[in-house]
Image: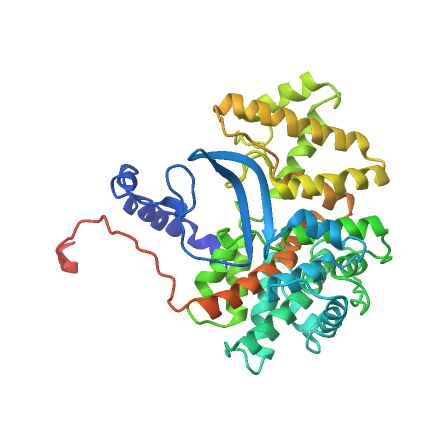
Amino acid sequence: MLDFNKYQNQIHDLSQLCVASTSINPDLYSQYDVKRGLRDINGNGVLTGLTEISEINSFKIIDGVKTPCEGSLYYRGYNINDLINGSMSANCGFEEITYLLLFGRLPSKEELTGFRKLLADMRKLPGSFVRDVVMKAANPDIMNSVSKSVLTLYSYDENANDTSIDNVLRQCLHLISVFPTLCVYGYHAYNYYKKGQSLFFHAPEYGLSTAENILHMLRPDSSYTQLEANVLDACLMLHAEHGGGNNSTFTMHVVTSSGTDTYSAVSAALGSLKGPKHGGANIKVANMFDNIKENVNDWDDEAEVSAYLDKILSKEAFDKTGLIYGMGHAVYSLSDPRARVLKGFVERLSNEKGLEDEFRLYESVERLAAQQICKKRKIYKGVSANVDFYSGFAYRMLGIPDELFTPLFAISRIAGWSAHRLEEILSGSKIIRPAYKSVSEHRDYIPIENR
């Protein structure tokens, strides 16, 4: 392996040149009305496309005034609350959601059964793929492991570059089917090679749902309760899609618009989701609560909890960033509908696990943090818990290791990414190419002997 240490000083000197050559005056962004992050000065997203796949509502227009309201989320026009409530008895809500996102309508009982069988048939990986790809160069970042596997699957596809709808749908369905296996097996390989733990692989079972198969493949004894499967199924449903404007889905649109293959587009979306500003937030929430539990003696003492939250906000505690993770959202203000739904499942699971005290702490932090953030930051539109606030707690109770938190997000979001890739191919006609204005001065070339 190349020894980068001997280049450290040279690279450091060159990096300083990068720093020195990047000197854009922040005032220029206002002068040229640049929408940094594709958001205006009020935080509203710049309209860059149209979609029929999902809808996010966080405000209403009352007497001509934009007024915050309780958040709502719709998949293909259906409220997420109704979708989750209606699918729980079948224990395959994620598969039903995936069908809806891809094909625009809810499946009949027969259609859902056929779709589940199709996904089960497509769970197979190429022969020796696990040995030759998944188990090679195991690393603690399972997202990178999955991205490597996705790009390698390109080599096994005889029609990898075909962007016809039939072929792209085939590729998307295969990736939706194998993502759980790629993620869980990637973790097992890392756990064995890097942490010295026992190695085992449970093959996915044909009749199990996606949520059930994840628990089956992850756990040594393959056992799980019905409530555990329901909670994980709900998590997958809630993370499956969230509009075209989130970073990874927009990445999918941008890369797809170039005409590239499905594997490259999905790998790009994975790279976006991996970022801590996007898919890694629930890990930060879980770690923050570990810190709170270590430093707050009486979890039921609201004054003590509030005092420690104030320390976090004042950059005196936890990671000293001044952030209470899991609170606030770029779009939602009064409430995140996903957090409301997930909270109910988490409460039931905490009762089953005997973790009622910990759930009460989460409830207390949710309420007290909202009050303190609004007061300290002078935020008047409201601050509420987002979906990451409770998802990390849910995963911890399910015995899911931290390394799989973000990959679980990917297992879910591949459904939405696939729907958006198909929509971009069918509806888009131009490569997405936003404008950047140069603010550098023109200079005369200087011969090298005169520099």
